[in-house]
Length: 145
Image 1 (tube, rainbow, N blue to C red):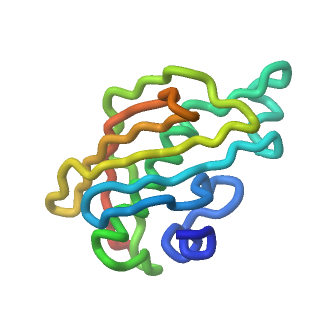
Image 2 (cartoon, one colour):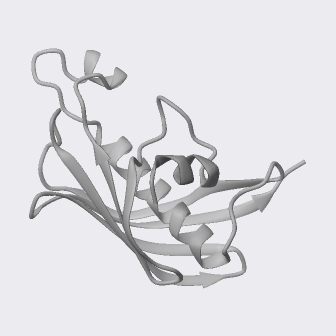
């Protein structure tokens, strides 16, 4: 899935869109996506000027966006103007290595459970073979308006 397909599925736009490409997807099971981390990211100006590091919360957001893409693959659809995906919870978040400009952050997310509109995922983000971040994520799709 390239960036054009991602833009059709996710409501996020610059500077908060954090998935550049989907590498693999097994609908209803797992997804693998990547984020190219560049020095042009707006958060690097202040985090940190002397040693730019991607904020951990944005690594979690990148995994959540990847999870949302998996949810849409499972549903066979994308969001409409009346749907929003919200974070419902984050458990066991661990940060193992810093992510810096020039890194490729590869997110692997597996669907653990789906019941009554609540999705529970296990996410791992890596740079090369090293784990940068891991967490259990819960998201929900809700109708609005």
